[in-house]
Length: 558
Image 1 (cartoon, rainbow, N blue to C red):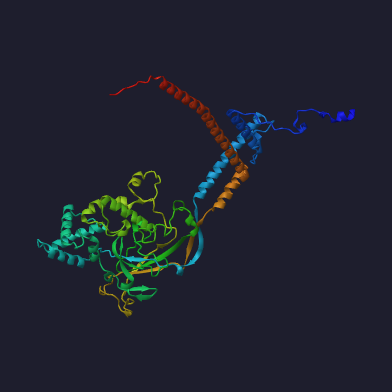
Image 2 (cartoon, rainbow, N blue to C red; image 1 turned 60 degrees about the vertical axis):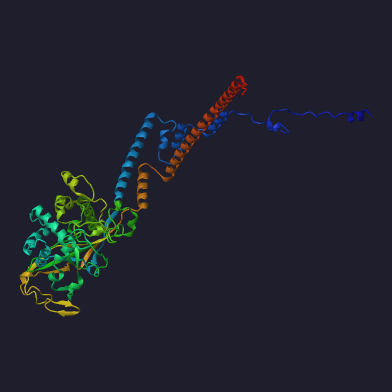
């Protein structure tokens, strides 16, 4: 009973064998809540966790583990100061040589295009024919000028005879740059008469372009017989009256019928390049051998800027060039803009579309000749880049500057060399002309049988095969990348992986610096905010206490 009573009594707690404070000895450990940290302590703890290494230690760790060659020698443990200084000099020298070689490679790669000989024996039969322009040395027809003098005499209110006007019309030679030493007062007086007597209903002033076109010798007065490839053809159908720097001339193949490039409305101007001028003597048979040369730039070069490749394709500047760019047209257009800006007029020889159309434009008349003579030197000297040349400073300042004009990337150059002339004998023996499909002989003969008044010119290709040049890209991007990579690997032991490591290190340090700056700003903001709130609370309490202390006044109004 006693035993049972003892069993029925209250249970005695069992004793533990080991009592410890370690967590793994606790049967049911209770997680203690973390001690509250102040804001400053939290920020310091995060900074210490984020920046485990100082900047100097981080740089040392980078140099020890960088993939570049021998940079670990600078911070390796056990190296003396002399040995570290030696490695520092080696690395500085290697970096200097590396920069010099890479800069030289970059400067060499700046010349993007290189000219190579594509075909040394290109058949001349595949080469387009050039355009041929024939101009008369007599810029004005005597018969046309005399008829014009009679017309002015009939309109003159003072009834001066035709001889007077014929003498005064000698001033028209100024339009072609021929100085006749005529008094300026006479020139202005003649221009005033022309504005009164020779003005069309829709013109406000005298139109020199239309009048000089009438006074210029016609193509039918210049050409007698024409042949192409030994076959006669009608000169009047194939030759057209066009404008050139010499005035109105007769041009064959101007519309591109016999050429593949179809270079329409090309303006021949010897002062702008691209035109070869030869003078023919009467009573002579002149031979003009043409030696063409082809230069073509591959289409892959279009991705390179024109300023880098130093040329322009035919469709890169279509405005003001009749949808086809050439270097000669660009220079002529630049000169036209300069003339119009300085003299407020445009010579009749230049196309009007070079300055944006004929609306509100004025052709140069006799009253503008003094201005045109004043700037002749400027317009005769054209530069496209300002390179310092000792001794030519004055010419560089006075020259016409056209920086946007670059050579054509693809063109055919026609060179005329070795021209010869023989005495003309029996010129009418083989002379024929074609008119409306009928062959007649001896052609368009208005000069009689005096060979001293005639000139025969024969234009032909001097060679059966020519050289064909091409401009190709010198170094593509992957070739330049490979060259620079080889130089960096040989001289300094650089590699793409090492560059990535270096960039990662720089980005990481910048990110840590940015985070530290933001945390510092946040800490200052939190520290100053409670102070400001407490100050505001005190100020509000003082204001309320002041209001309560003020005595209240009772005002009784009647």
